Amino acid sequence: MPDYSLEDIVSLAKRRGFVYSTSEIYGGLTSSYDYGPLGAQLLKNIKDAWWTEFITKREDMVGLDSQIMLHPQTWVASGHVGSFSDPLVEDTKNHKRYRADHIIESWIEQHPGAVDHSFSVEDLSIAEMDLFISDHGVLSPDGNTLSEAKDFNLLFKTGIGAVSGEKDTVYLRGETAQGIFSNFKQITDSTRVTLPFGVGQVGKSFRNEITTGQFVFRTLEFEQAEIEYFFNPEESDWRALFSDWKEAMWQFVTHTLGVREDNIRWRQHTDAERSFYSKDTYDLDYHFPFGWKELWGIAYRTDYDLRQHMQHSGQSLEYRDPHAGEVFVPHVIEPAVGINRLLLMVLCDAYWFDAERHRTVLKLSSNLAPYQAAVFPLMKNKPDLVTKARAVFATLLQSGVRVTWDDRGNIGKRYLYQDEVGTPSCITIDFETLENDTVTIRDRDSTEQERMPISDLQHVFNIKG
Image (tube, rainbow, N blue to C red; front, side, top):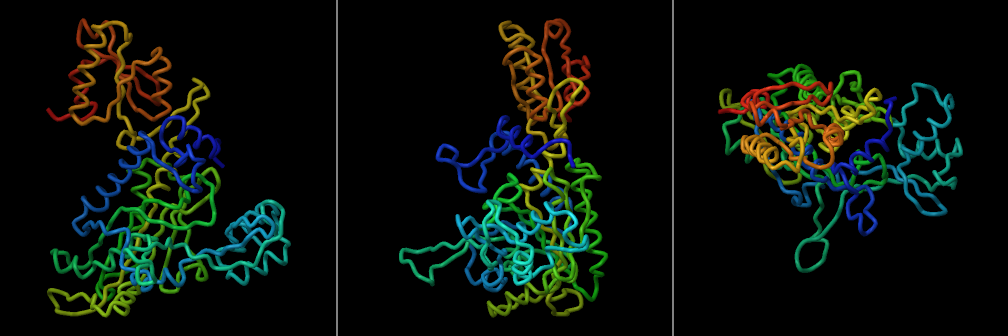
């Protein structure tokens, strides 16, 4: 396990303005969080990186931004109205609700050796979960008996229009993917895309989660980044495409986001766990402080989704090959990730307590760090130093560098603060600067300091003249 706790991450996130409990002045709202000044920037940097790598840099990808509220029949067709649910059990005394599979997993952790090591909770049906809870006398976290497990639909339901009624019922989307499928025909008609190609989007999704806790890992409202990659199964080898996407996902996490490879792994879904329409499904797991958990999923969904929408809408979503003239329903591979989970992973992976110097450091890469640099005047009560430092700060700011000004307290405390929020470089303007236009630039991770001309900062931060 990591040598830090989730509480360490939560404490830093709140203390330094990454993540706050939403509506805290009213006592908060379960499984709901706001992203503070630094968290909002980090979240944006992650989204921008995802969009750049998977949309902008690929000639076989286009982007989309579909609505949060879609026609309600969309969710009937996708199966969300009928089967988008989690197994719920209730404490029979205080009526607190829990996910049955999580209750069983917790019991197994507390009773090592009670079940065979090959036992998989994900493979259990609702009836089998009930039987396990009964046979093993599993109780609620408060020590009370549990109700029978039942399906709990995760879709948030609301209404539109002046008159309430069934015809006005709409849902907050449970995933972004369905907007891609329902727009498939419009995308192919209005662009020059040809198979194989993908459509990606980033946007809010909503799920009425039973389980709370684990910070931003599981929340009622979250941001998803999903791709639907369409192809002709007669011309493209789905296994090769699947492998290519797995490699792209791995590279994004390890290279673009800078996460250590020993903290991620692939896990293939079992036949019982995998959706009936999926030919293969993998999760890219990350080793969070609370264990190995799903970060990013990829599934080969065949032509199930497009056919479902064709059946329920009565509209053709077939593709006509512009060269051969063949008409067919494309198959699809779907890589889907929660941006909020990526943020939590990045915070966890970057967290480092430097025992030698007794400081907490977020070792964020420069492309992700909320601030790429901080500018300090050595002393804030010396007008010449402040004026010069302000000039350097303004130059960096106008050049597009994410830079912050810091003149609070002594310089040692400024360094510690910037280390903790992940700022890679601190630039100090001192009396020598006034003499020869050089500054001291300090590296966050090594704490080494280098003297350089102000003009060299354009190379350090890739400023174009």
